[in-house]
Length: 381
Image (cartoon, rainbow, N blue to C red; front, side, top):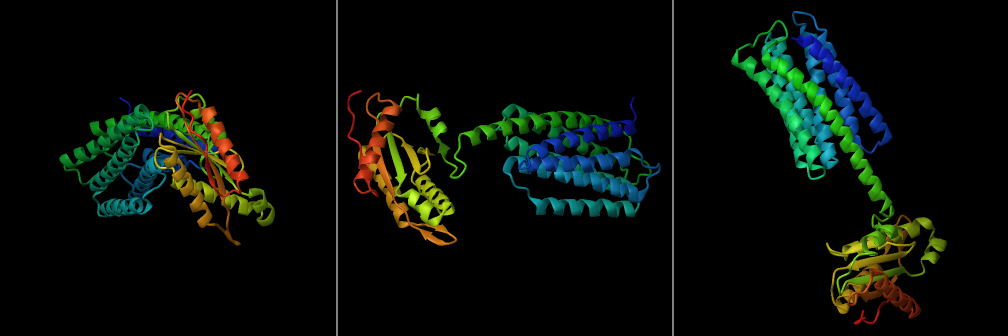
């Protein structure tokens, strides 16, 4: 049977290897702050377990309090990383409060000579952190059902093993300890932690890589200034799609945009672009699609509706943009837009409807700009 000290050394080495891998991963993508939290958690776990595996027999009170405090700190960072992974935010105040209460409770127990009680507090706090992390990954499982369910299971299993350690000490009434506890629960806990670190490490890296891949794909299809789809994404989505009869395409062009850039500067032009995108997004509704397809050109795709309804949406965008100037540090920047509108005829292709909307846009510009022009209905394919 492998002694518990050897298992602690094995856990420390596994944690150190994972820590190095996580730090390298975070350095490659600094926006992934959950990776940094995971790496920090492993730093404290390594520190705690390295101290635990070499502690004197019997207990050295201050050394043990320091070791357990480091372990609790690592658990706090584990939960923080799980929260950051799921929501991008961390309940720092709550984590700090639970950490402080746990450290004070176990520290007081050790100082009063109740090392067993202090160890029970440690195991319960670790179990809570592991269970909380399991809940975070379970709630995030829609992103990657199999991987995140496995993550949740590993964290939950580790949580149960910490609870078992606390239960055995409580059941045996061992409130006073002079040496590290050694029982079946401690052995299972050590093995579970080794399995958990190995499995969680592999799954974490896989999940982070798949998330980075999805993010890069999304960035390739998104206009960075406005957050709308770019031209490539719009055509990828609709160019070969079979449009429902009545699907509306709206083409927008900001009037005299070059003049804004020339007279007010490119910062003003950028402010106008982002402001128009916000107004366009407001009027799209949940089923509409908006894209920036060129410098000052935008396109919107709306679900099947009458031409009059599509024109009303276009007019709402036009009027809103005219009445609400873009704001910049140098003051308000007024601008207008011209709009061309077309609705899909029977079995008409996307490119055909887009072309008719584009022609209607040019008629709007030729008619004096700041107006909405509709293309005639196409009734025959």
